[in-house]
Length: 87
Image (cartoon, rainbow, N blue to C red; front, side, top):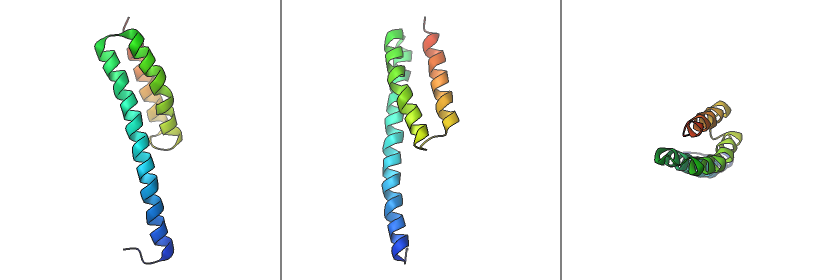
């Protein structure tokens, strides 16, 4: 257990940041799931719309440090590839 005042504050700060990161990750995953569902349904226009909504969310998660930059780029790239092939 934390003894010093600064250690107790650090625990509070970490808890807040963890909650924020959890929300960001959850939001990103929701947008990714929407893209996955649109691709699975085979509707190209819906998939493109979902991807346009998901892309900034994925990149924002990378910018905020929730996921790695390369992971975000890879996700966007693979989604784009799959949406393109729906023709």
